[in-house]
Length: 320
Image 1: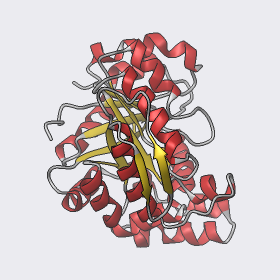
Image 2: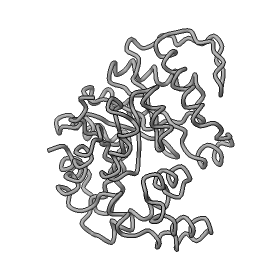
Image 3: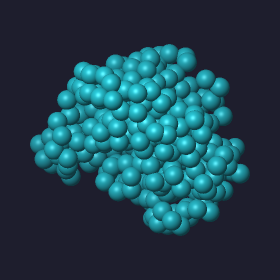
């Protein structure tokens, strides 16, 4: 892919109001960062931080990782994606995904049905719509009749798909060319790469807890792991990666409603594998390990950590 030199950071930055992040974002290219990737769940949306970054740091590639395909209608995604693509011609990746049962069903009352098929349909619709075509098509999971994006961006954005297991990884490779994954260790990358093939760009969010206080780092890491790896799609992902036995005690306690026991059941080794922590220079070396094992684009997510000096962390986590 020729992307081995990519090095990303997650926006918005934690602990700083969005409007106050301008100087930090504007300085990223000089530090060697190539990308900023957003996310959205129950706080800031996925597009606004990138809209600001498109003006604050015009050199950066911008990506959503991810915006949801159930909580946003097809045309809504096309309109928002087209707007950002016009602000950052050739530098925007529209990363989409199913999100989770909590966000889709519990919060929005939308059935999370046929995730593979809806992902496929959305990628095909977005490719046609963002290229300026008039779309009238009955897809398997939705239909669009007579929609045209006006104006369509001069350079359509690249597309990416959140993918955790083989079926979705193959779909991402075939229909988007970029697969976004999450919660994996460097040693897991070759397994994902083996399914994606050599020509699919692999993007992954890498969680960094920049503290030398081991107890604090593992406390934060355990809470994050319990929040994510108990979600069925993430549990299945880690079972596929070979961690079924390791996460089983946590899942058993969590599903029984015992949150305290679930946290206690997460071994230190799992935290240390999936959440990077320690001195900043060491953290940067750990991120570089992902490149070495075949990841194209690591996207650092700096976790909220007591006593953190955010500008220093951003500077010292930049590529060597």
